[in-house]
Length: 328
Image (cartoon, rainbow, N blue to C red; front, side):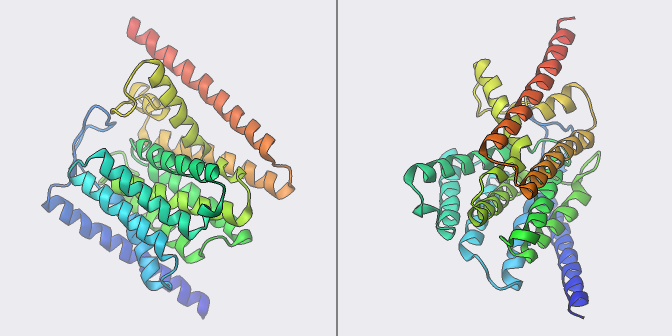
């Protein structure tokens, strides 16, 4: 009976999340919260912006109905969601956004007692967490990529949670349900909605929150490889733009996924699925090595180096191909 009751509770939660997102569509249409194509965009049609609001709503639903756990983290997420949604509607100052980001991340650090670590580790934690949030946000440029990658990350966390119990199962399940609901409207050739900053920034914060909980529980930094595909693409894209003397804070279309989808004309969902599948393969390799006790700092670094080399070779090949096409 408890199993049936739990299944019904999660089924109802999924239905509620779907209804909330449909309700948001009506509000977005009424208040003209519409995404219009620009120089960074990989789409050419008007679409509802901010559909990713379902992600923080899932966490809020979990908080209200599953015991009011981890209030500081939830408060940090809601602060990120509010400022990001406001930025979706009306562009805000970068100083305001980064101020809220620092506050939200600080709440997570306080909740996890990270401030008890040496100051240089705390500084590195801030750099990597804020960097991850912004990188994840910039990676949200084609249909399906954010939700596919998030879903793979959440499923991986759920698998690890079966052994380490570092996060509430109910939280992970509701987040997975929110991704399924969002994917129904976004993972299409012509999406009905985009995540918007409220979706990509909120999901990035959620994934960082889960990663930090996992690292604190396990004492292992090697789990950061679960984010390696996005991290490698983001870092080397920044390096590429710096070498071209470009302003890295301006809109661009130089991520590898953008080159594949915009220049090579591969279907968005194929590219999004490729990123998710690559990260899935890496995650499975990491989990297998963890299980066998063969993964340490050096081998994790070697795997990251291998991923970087493969990425660079692929990027270089595509870039040269595009340059030769443009010179013809």
